[in-house]
Image (cartoon, rainbow, N blue to C red):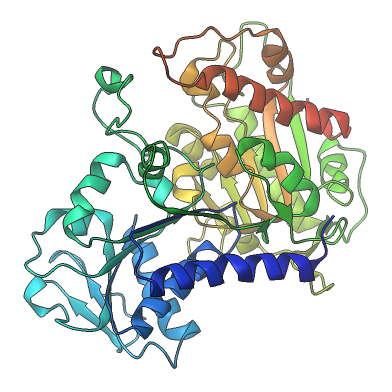
Length: 449
């Protein structure tokens, strides 16, 4: 395992190369980043390098919340280099109360800065306007969440692109049938960086951030098979943990919690009914997930979630819960005590799509295959599992029906992909199977039925 100084040097080298690329005014850079690797900070370092050359800079994010956050971080992290930021928005969007006064709120393109400066907007906003005066360089955050069709609309924003993102995230959501483009090398529904990286002979700088700073060391081992490039863990083995402060009972839930002291991830299973598991809404699984959250707080669990060596008592706002279906998330909210549902200080419950870019000290997730006995290619796509398995800083508890391991072991995926396209079903099946087997080998699958 590499020491932190070596990983710090590798990270610095990636950023130095990015800055050099930007200062050299070269056309294209794509950066692959594992979860929790500091990709937004790296992107903003590139922005500052462009500003240092007196350039007019555009930044594209995938959501308004990400755009607001990028504005705040530019002013907070680079106070000497950045004195003002323009936030380009739609006319129906209200300015957040806590937004710094140095962030200029702009609804009309004629009020954008004509010279040096940085303007932040969503990909959707940039794609809807016709610029009279293009920017010199465009930085795209969370680029793997952007479809190629959206990327094509951004070509009028700037002639130079820097794109950074997490390839393990959920593919872009497209609301129309896409089968007609399955054999196209530039399918409009595909992640934009995937299309660009597949272009032969295209001049670009390819970079990879070398480590995940968010996850515990053994969780990095769990999620790394979801990626096509190698990265290390910043955390040392055993440095991150969840340990209960109060004694355990003989209940299986307490065994699940106690296992987090030595394994950052654990699976809590329920028996699968003879007729098959509930599909979108599993009340028993929702109650188990909620009970685990309540029990963590009752036992006054202490959490070490960084490299300071200190542990702190777990609070409700430190816990996140995720499930793939909205109906299941509604059941999860209902199963929680009312005091833990407070949006400002309680447990956040949401879909993996909305968890992208977020983190908590402890995550409780419902396995995407828990309600599936005959997996489809959609079910086996591992973006959602990857997101749910990479939001925690100390502990992950996966709630599932107990058939999943046997279902994966007995399943033989058929090659349904179009000619010349990757075998997504086969790859997803292998990645799902590796994830379940890894926790089984750790003896971290505990029956709670």
